[in-house]
Amino acid sequence: MNPHAKLISLLSLFLGTTITISSNHWVMAWTGLEINTLAIIPLISKSHHPRAVEASIKYFLVQATASALVLFSSISNAWVTGQWDITQLTHPTSCLLLTTAIAMKLGLAPFHFWFPEVLQGTSLTTALLLSTIMKFPPMTILLMTSHSLSHTMLVSLALISAALGGWMGLNQTQTRKILAFSSISHLGWMAIIITYNPKLTILTFYLYILMTTTVFLSLNTTKTLKLSTMMTSWTKTPMLNAFLMLTLLSLAGLPPLAGFMPKWLILQELTKQEMTVTATIISMLSLLGLFFYLRLAYYATITLPPNSANHMKQWHINKTTSTLTAVLTSLSITLLPLTPMMFAIL
Image (cartoon, one colour):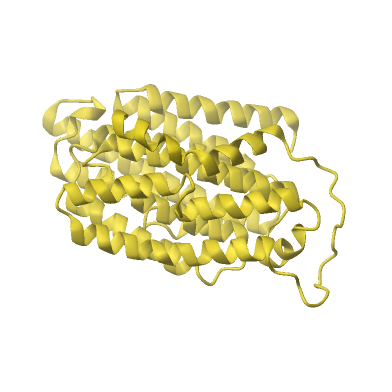
């Protein structure tokens, strides 16, 4: 890809994200979302492979539909209330349309079908952008309107996302698809608590971005796209693979790693809200995710392939592990002791 075109796409991406995050007016927020969508499409299709082109078309169609729903929701709300302020969303139909639109943009089930396919059709770096930065604008809109949205609908979407994210990730062999279903499952945890404690959703979102970025950067260092490649990557970077295993277990939410903190706090908050049954269901559903994270960790560090694979093994890696990956890995694993401070903030 032309470096100038890549620079323009990345700058537009950050510009669109900044506009949406900092705006209070629906039209400005919608403009930022559109800039974001148009900026990421060249990055998705930059390899010119048929799968990449297919992924960019799928992404464009879904995001265009979601943007149209956002615009329709805001116009219908302004028609009834005379308000263009994002926080003043009060009309029931507008709230329903916006919830659907944001679920499509984030990849919440049952509007999640595009997300694994798009990630599978792109490179690991673009998949990282789609899983992290591209979720900032819709998540910001969801946080700003959370007090107006239907609690029942959000809890239903959250439980379906946690179930499908765990269930559909069980049988995957491609690392990008596994991380896509992991993202859907984590979004379920964020959506279930957003109307009760938005600050806790922000904490969960930031920790999810931290851990997902670490996993993607680690996989990108070893160029691991499939589980079969992961089995031999330990020979190239044994230390990185050992820490990748810990990061994956942190994503699963196992104590004493950092990923346990948001799940612990969310279950505690749900219990306080007298939603014990919901808390029990979502904690049981997280076991599905735990299974495929353990599977990934097993492939990353424990499995020695019994015979030669069908692909060329690269026994030496030219790239050194970046300082950023090392710092993010350390944070992804060791943040749990900060939980008392989070209690004070929340």
